[in-house]
Length: 53
Image 1 (cartoon, helix red, strand yellow):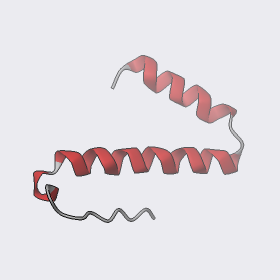
Image 2: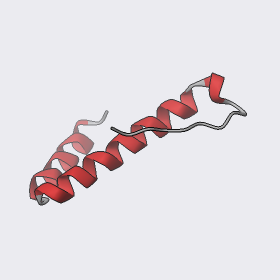
Image 3: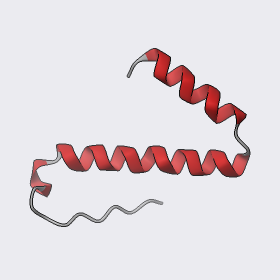
Image 4: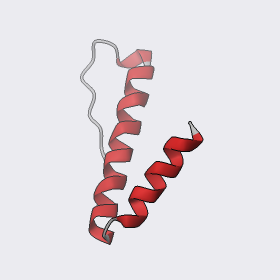
């Protein structure tokens, strides 16, 4: 990952309230799950359910 992107995300996270930090991290987890789902060729043509803890 580009170091600039990591720094920008970190700076944004630090400015958010604790509640919004939790929402931000949920969005990051959803993006990660979506990317992993796309990369997983076994998911092609199948319905995928993503569970977030």
